[in-house]
Image (cartoon, rainbow, N blue to C red; front, side, top):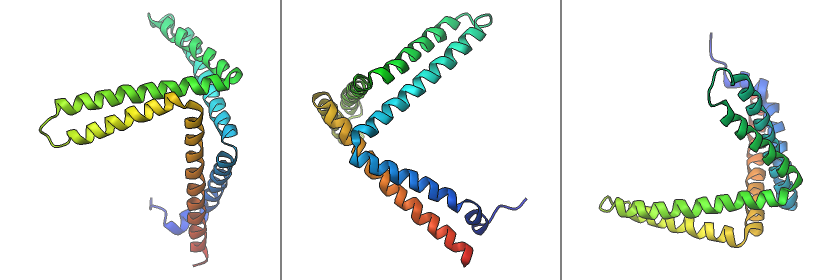
Length: 183
């Protein structure tokens, strides 16, 4: 079987790139114009994932309870995920800030360990990279702790800008692929 040519691919799939581009551009515009709405969308998406994952974990744990001695761990994990998912839908603001604080804490802890790793790797010539990376991680973590809402909105806005630019690039690629049909 022969691999498809670029002309065959463009003939078949160029319009899928247009659809992807439109969704990316629309989401990008939404995130830039209404970052709170986009942040809410992210939290609801996270809530739906946690709820779905929790329900599946509960089902699997109950199916495995006769063959797996620690099935109850998966059950507890599933129940916790369901509770988290429901909480995300009813308290999206609290969920957003709590998740962001977890990220901030992770940044600070990983920054500390990067600095400690720099001391352990003295003499390799890369310790300065770890120190700078560690310091930046700690600073960003502290900023996230100090200004969680502004930080969340800034990140959503940056995601929106990326999505908008990415959507435009996808659209350009789709147009180029479409033009191969007439060439």
